[in-house]
Image 1 (cartoon, helix red, strand yellow):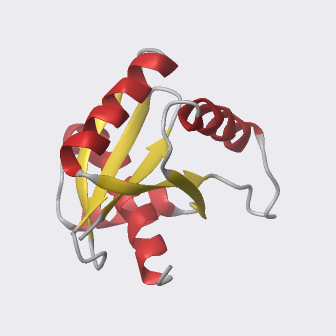
Image 2 (cartoon, rainbow, N blue to C red):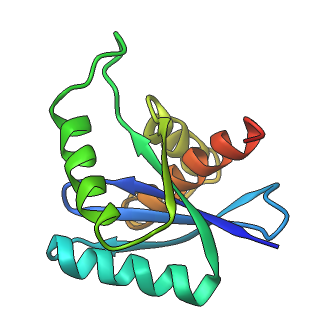
Length: 137
């Protein structure tokens, strides 16, 4: 049995989702407030050890025309640093529209604006990871 984590890397937060051991479904795990790359990576590595994670899936926020913009470059820079601190395979998933989809679901569930702000990134990470799992890799 193995588990994957999904990351939605933003400037202020990182949303984290985790798969079930059968790699069928993704669940929201948590959102961490960004402090420094090293502290953020330490938290991620703690989760990897605790949950026995075997792969990391990271959302890559491409532009709508499929190009790599400033935010995607920031994500790639973070992943480059993360690779220095883990031997796990790290793969990207196109995350265009995941935050919009996550927001829509939370609104449909009547989640308050304040509560949405607290969970949106982990829900977006869930979409990222579920997209990867659905691709059957």
